Length: 209
Length: 209
Figure 1 (spheres, rainbow over the protein chains, first blue to last red):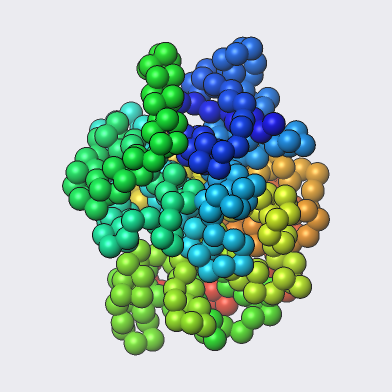
Figure 2: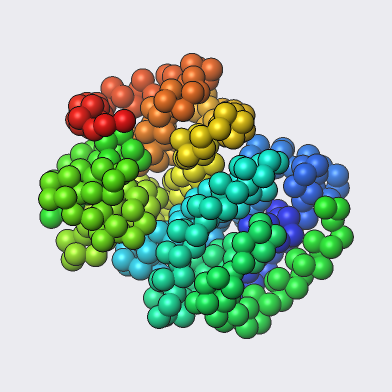
């Protein structure tokens, strides 16, 4: 059985959504991302992955895969019939990879990460200032379409929707981009997305700040 | 014919290396990344891609693809016989995606980008402080292997080698990680890699700082 190491409402939420949307049963291991402990047994999370970051997906063969872009495509390809990623070889698969990269690098790491990392206001402000342009690219793309790639929900949507959910905590109002407000609402009407978020929100409250 | 929009020694270098390693002829458009002008005709680069960032690969059908992770896999899949990416469906393809994501997000955007963005020393230092851990993960992985994925050069190596070349300009000494010094030397013995770097280094000198 697949095993997902996660921290509630961190980017591993996208992997949980992908697993649930694909109908794939998995074991979920709660990790305290600050102390780097696996909650259930107090084990050292850095022994699970030297990166010390979620998501980590343990495969059926025992190997462990990291990085949302890789984990999300792996999950999607386990259940092609769920349509969570266009098939390899299709140009839309390249578009999926393009959005996974953009969300992971331009939104998550170039913006959200610095905003949480940096302690001083000037650095936080510099990160926030840059977000407008990146977010507008996604907002413009979604102005006339329901999903990032093709005409259906994919793992790229799970990834971006997670990032948008974090914006408020990072001091950015999604309401500045009406198409993203609609998009986020649309994604959150999906029963599996809703259930995944509810599960992680409840768990998040059990963790110290 | 494929067309690559690039800025010399920026991350688009990895795409040039991939094209040359694959033996794919392409047209190269030099972009001034600061003024957002396409040099040959003074055109507005933001009309080519609203992201205003390189690489942009214009495909044979006229569509344009962005983001190194997507562009590099696209190029590799055009010439599977060059072995620049493991085939889709192979676990090593997931590993390739894992490294493309890690280099793009943890090294390029979480480190190199902030180091060049931020004007104040404290922010630059904070970005540099974080790099040790990320770089060590790559260095540990390469301690006993020649390439990032499998036993041959892939586009993931083109991507990481580019990032390592930029370290000195960002104030980080690769010499702190002996396995990376050896790796970078190994990658640079490849004739196409060498030619790509020489071409872009020469062009880089023609651009104002």
